[in-house]
Image (cartoon, rainbow, N blue to C red; front, side, top):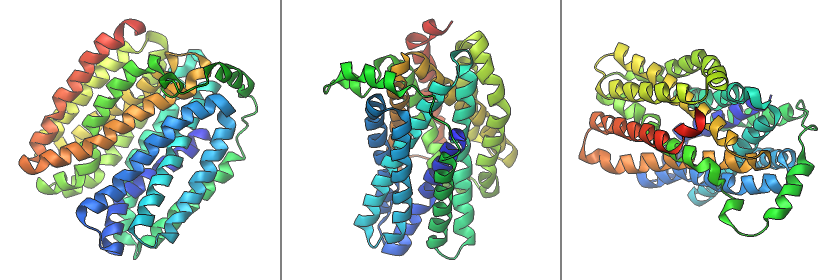
Length: 380
């Protein structure tokens, strides 16, 4: 149920990313740059939410933080109906992002606290599948709703229904066994404004690698529709995320248990290698078959690397700092996903999409080299 809640929250997040810029242009006559701000400010809010949540969890526990996040998400999702002008919409997007950051970090922490250590790779793999699938299904539904509904209000109503379902699901989850008193006890010895109160240093090495792969993937997420149109593969582009999601569903139940039995290295190197090959094929695809094969390879590589990295971030630290480790992982992932489209968007007018995506292959290979030097020896 926690994974399903995370799935719906993340789905709303990614659904809105693909429609909100168009809403800002159509409803408020926003410029392209302002519409981009309306879309990307959400990720800034998510970063803020994740940054504060790790610390809050160590102070008041996961259960109460989860409650706060759900209430904030409920209020901000309904707030879209009251967006009367661009400044109000931007503020709503920012606060909505904060709520998503709180929930995403808290659900990841709850999962780490619930799952037995011997099955952490498998359990976090299943949990993180909820977010990865949402990144595929959310944009797909968003585009579908945009093409088949008469107004953006219908999309906001759809989101409102989903968030009510999230709140109702909370009451089916028993979180009474989470040991909040121990977390609180540990937190009392960590008062002050030290960076380690907000970032988990032990989770930084794997999180830095996640920043690189998030940056490499961000262009696919943001520019897929433009790219598929430029190479006359629009129909294949509409199926990209579906193929991407299917390959994750098929491979995730294998890679998680494999990590638990054999260690992370046996999964990470093939995942990063397959991601690099998938990106290379994606950048050079000339027909629908190659384009969708690339989608599958990117799903196997990037999708599995994400879940393994989250498990490694949690594994690297003590139980009372799971919240900080989870938030550190997501903060650097969000930076990669958020900064990527901005940087690549600045470069794109001076080159082509093919060259842009081809340039992401060395970025992935840099992540592979960094993994060897920063993480490999700890995960034999």
